[in-house]
Amino acid sequence: MAISGTQTYRRTAQEEDADGLETLDNFVAKKYNDWPNEAGFVGLTEHRGPIKLQVHGTIPAYAAGALYRTGPGVAEIETAERGTYHVSHWFDGFAHTHRFDIAAPTEAGGETTVTYSSRRQGQEYIDKIKKTGWRGSITFAQRNDPCIGLFAKATSRFDKEVNNNVVVMRNVPGLEKSGKSAAAGPAGHHAVTTHNIVVSTDNSGLQVLDKDTLEAVDSDVQQSRFHPDLKGPLSLSHAQRDEDTGDLFNVNLALGRFPAYRFFRIDAKTGTTDILATVSDKDVSPAFIHSFFLTQNHVVLCIPSSHLAWAGSKVLWKGNVIEAIKPFDKSMACKWIVVDRRHGQGVVARFSTPAGFFFHSVNAFEETAEDDQGTKQTHLNLDYIAFDNTATIYAMYYDILLKRNGAADAFWGNRETVEGMRPRFVRRRFALPTRKQTAAEAAAATADEVLSIPTPHVGEMPTINPDYACRPYRYVYSIPSRGLSTAIGECIAKTDLQTRDALIWAGPRGHTPSEAIFVGRPGAADEDDGVVLSVVLDGEGRRSYLLCLDARTMTEMGRAEADFAIAFGLHGLHAPAA
Image 1 (cartoon, rainbow, N blue to C red):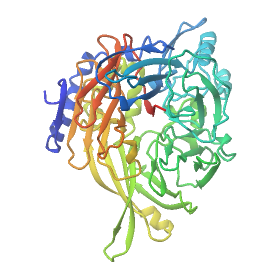
Image 2 (cartoon, rainbow, N blue to C red):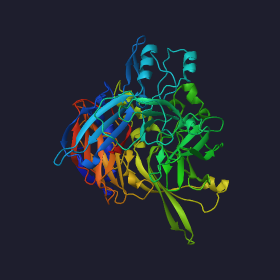
Image 3 (cartoon, one colour):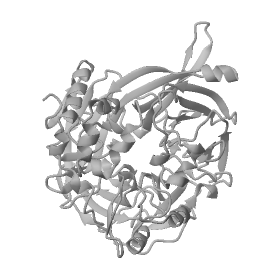
Image 4 (cartoon, one colour):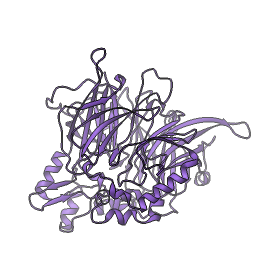
């Protein structure tokens, strides 16, 4: 089969349709049942280490530093009173953060070494569930236990249990004096260019970790600590950073009759926070939103068609986000809000695009061009991984991922469902108005779709060379699905946005990669001059390895092998060596 083998291969734009059809056929033929991935979800343990990994091949010295990753870990807990507690959805698995310490050779002719350590951040939460047998507080998708009384459920909604398991950030401004000092940890960690490590999720709370031991040193950092107006309970997992200034941007969502989206910036020099704009009106719905866009001069929010019912209050009633999301409706267009981040002008434009959903923005940048009358106009290029509907959210239940009780076959067996869940890279291009929009102009404005590349030539968990953030760029690294696994994907693609060619690395059966992190060669002139790092699970052998690919050719340079399985994570970052 053209895309189902084990190799690094190039696919062209002319092969997009055939490869998409093969992916669809693989799902319908239930080939995912032959792909072992249980070890990435079940039986996961801490390794506080650091444990030395066995390096094969070459990992270049310039990759030295720490690769941090976080994501869901333990999903089953033995309780004292109620037997085994099962987490329903992968996004609610208990937080587990990992550090791969990559050390350059200490002498000429030496080899790069890699050590590994990990720590659970939700152990207090786990211990509480062991005693009570059930889970309080708001979750993403945990199904209610019918044996728990209504009063207990209602009062537990206000428990503030911390389970941040989505995104790792470093050098978050405004937290220099946050939290306690970590207990003395094991020796062996190398110094990296970071003064804090912070993990986030889709609520407004942050958790600060010790950069070496990964112990939580402050688990109660609410966004209201940065600014008193940031009181909303929801936010976006993926903050955006201005790589030139270090300033950090995000959006806080307060629920109510009219939800309030507050766009804010944390100044890297002063640690102070500014509210750039507040948007609250009847035309703006509260929604589950995972990421947004940052250009040279603007913050851009897309409110996808994942609206929350009852003005968001259904989250409290159901105790989770997923059951509060309205059924997908093609009439619910995506609403976009453009906010100036340089000159204090607040909202400068609004526009709409057809109904859809996305988890991840890829990049965004501005270009100036002349219109037909010769007037210069700024165009926003907004890149993201788009879905036609919200069905992908429901594919992440553990029963589906682990193929339990026929759940995977029931979900993926419908060809129409599979067709509607195929992600694609989308670029939308919006011409900023040269004068203030009227209400009618804002309601009528739209953005052209100028580029679309379908899976499996691109996939989820998109990353780029970070030096090209907010700039024109050429390459995207992602994890496409070829229909061979129930996981997010089972290969790594480098997609060329100019030629539409895709270079795809695919391991043997059962080798499932995680998000690909680009590390550039110092002094590189080319965008793809560097390496890509990904943690890969060997599902058959129930062990993992850190894979190092040449970012130009997508061929293996080296790997660092563990003799145990490491959890499928969500997101990570590379902190260079000091």
